[in-house]
Image (cartoon, rainbow, N blue to C red):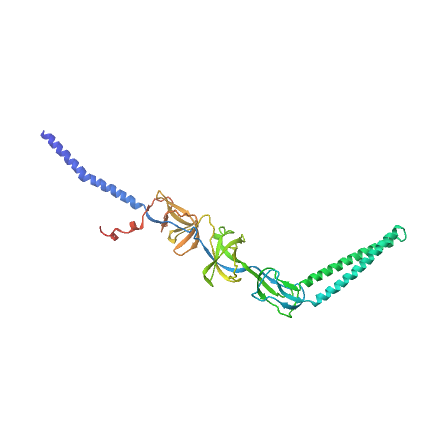
Length: 384
């Protein structure tokens, strides 16, 4: 019995040594191992990209032009008799602008009409003669040669009559140009003539521009869209105009057409915007800021500038997936806002982007995501 007691005591001592001596050391070693493994996993902070869907806007300089803008020249020669429209006058299509006195053209027309009367009389006489000689030829009263000559003379007189008619018609049309009409509805922007001024026909040589008419009910605005937005700036894309003289107003318009080509010098695409101007508030030649909202199928997002990684194969960002592993994405940069940058492709709004990624970060790296509170040192925490 005494030996059994000794054995029990020895076993109890061994169990106590195991529980209170060896086990704490094993637990401490396991904890240290886990802590060491945890320290080997880099900790990162992530941000969510800001979506710019519906808020993306290009602001570009533009020059306002009249929808139609044309100089008016005289088509006949003479002296200005009177004018009926000065600069700033709103005219309708077909409205009389000026009259030209054309004495030389009038005299030429009178002479042409007299020549026409002579040609008509000669044709009528030749026609009657040819008919008589044709009848005499049936009875062999005249030679066939003489009859053919009379028929040939009739054809010549007919051709001369037609020439006289065309000459009269030409001079009548030229005389009609003594009255100058507005080709379309608009406003007179230039008047370069006055009563008594010598008028020369045509737009070249000595011809002088008499008036300049601009249609301002509808305006054209040309802008150069950067290449990055050329595929998204399609006909029908909404646009707005802002001007310094209208600080609190925006004038709506829309893209109607583009050059469909990129200028090699500027890497931009010439784009035309149509703007209605029913009250004539906008003036041709004015400078305006054009606000365009591109219709992108993949809306751009914005991320902090310190999320970008500049690698030999291009600009990238590091994304943390659900399994806490890193994936590198190649992105295309749009506009630079200073502390933030626009990403036009390669990134969606739901991604978790690593802030301040290390240069040694590679795809597949296991990371631990922490928030800002976890990053603060324990000394900064208030005692409980």
